[in-house]
Image 1 (cartoon, rainbow, N blue to C red):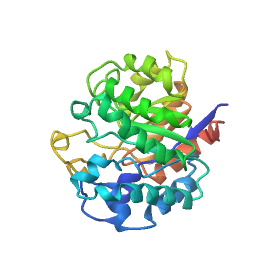
Image 2: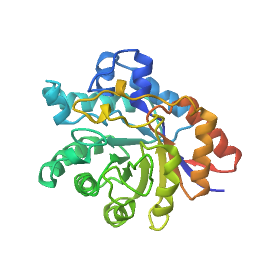
Image 3: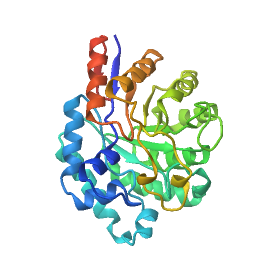
Image 4: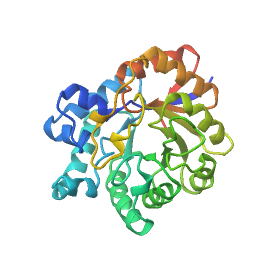
Length: 295
């Protein structure tokens, strides 16, 4: 029926669960340092589950985060390690992840454009050497979108924009700005638009807005109960977030299939979505007559 690009799931939380270590502000980066080879193992597990895209473990590799952890001299080596782990997984397609500067879900802390654009461009330049496309993740405001896209598009790779929306109202970005206003920004520079790291229940509202544009669109939700006030404080860790117990592979796949019915052609999972979830989505998509495709 339709060609569907199936993304992988949440690398960071999968690393935390498998390592069993106490989470730190460096999150998935810390696990990659402490457990060499685990990232490639998870990439392989997602690919075997049916994912046609592997997303690099580079979301949290930013100079500002490393400075806070007194590891600013390791920026280039950590980027190289994450890219090597992705290549070693033999994934069919590699997407270079660009996470937010400073902190997730905090548009109020995002730097001004003059500061942000060069930092995003530096990350994009390193990713572009080894990735098939770039994906700007958890974009929480219009200014964030403008800056990350301006930095990412300079290297000739396709760029996907993934925004994060209010967990109670999918028509609003985390900043409170209308999702509608992201369309002209994305249309100018992105090759696809998605919603990520948000509650699955609110995603249909965002997809209905994406459908008004001309870009391919899709979604990958998280499995957190909610983004807590504690998590929005200085230097949070994922220990401040609680996973949902009701979001089984079957339940999550139910959500995903409604997104596909709404026109989504790029789907997958974010935090707390593991290989079992992706395998169930792949099974459902195939059973419904869809074809799993690469970008």
